Image 1 (cartoon, chains in turn brown, blue):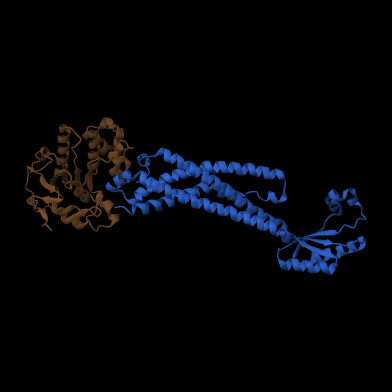
Image 2 (image 1 turned 135 degrees about the horizontal axis):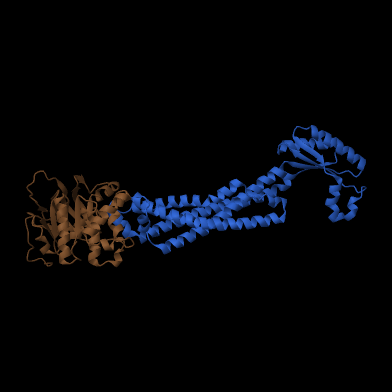
Length: 251
Length: 293
């Protein structure tokens, strides 16, 4: 068995706590081969990470472990200082409310309006209806969709749906924001705006993890770290890599 | 999550809901009919018990009118002093003759016709001891006395009514079970239909109880809507049948009338079924969600 590849983030701020810790994590679906093998890394609070790698490398699987949609087959995952692998099912909702997720396929509720989709995390968290309208309208304005507030997702373009999904993920001011290819369906201008949003959230203290193929994007957040997955293994144990290797098929 | 307009929209599927409303309407319509039958039959049984079971008729079969009258006088004297007897009165001879007119014609009015004398007796309590006491008094008054306890010949009727009552309440129980089963199936189908939405809610941090509540509230509205339709239709049928029974002028069927408490019970049927459906939906959804992460 190969030695675990460990990402040393090496951030200088000593006050920063580890918000996520993976140790020798493996993930296997059914009886198939391991999708993720011996993945070890640590994310510090308030940092910004890109997760890269070719298609099928296991990026989405790793993110699923991160946002608690999946339990690992082996290894240790610590989230917010607690063991997430043995976390009782009843405590999952509380943890999930602290994590914002932008899904690759958006996962908007098709029969709810754009407004109601964005409001969903607040309503789930029990925020009074009177306190919902202002933040939702702000988010709609921020993603440039105020005029489409009443539109159900099937009537929106892919890019518009993507923006609604992002607004929904960040409205609850999560401690961790996980985004799977968040700029895949938007034009370059919108991609840059979204990235700036992630950057601003990061500056407010949110730990951001963005899975992407877009290497130009990586260079727009110079302070971000890069994690790279290949065939289910995390490479670049130094975490200092800033540019993709020439072998990357997604380049 | 409190039930808000947006929450109600979370689980869309209008067509499926309409179907559920009509299924519930039919189930509760049948339940209302069965409950009305059970309650009215129980009421008729009680009325029979009250009216007839504590009543005896003593016949004095004596051809000689003078002896018959003397025996009746002794009998009445004995009965009226007995503590178990509430009332003892001789049936008017003219009434008896009228009752026999269909068979005997005007000949029944002939004073010389040896019609037995009849004494109606109301007991203070309807039991074997009281009947035995009356029988002793009657036989002491005259050996020609025959005691006829109405409860003994009413026993088959009472048994039939009791069976009908059990059948009706059994039907109510079957309908309640069937309703719970329909709700379970509907909740499971709903979970499959809304799997995507449920996954999203889970990922946003919704608890199983919050999700189950969405299903509970939806099924409550559907059951209550269907229940009101079914109850109104059922009550209409019960009223029509009640009017027809009233027109029959039958003493036994007159006991089938529903009391105020019975009407209240029937009207409460949709609410009872709504609560049942909510519990069934909650159990089904929580069990199913417990299987996923």
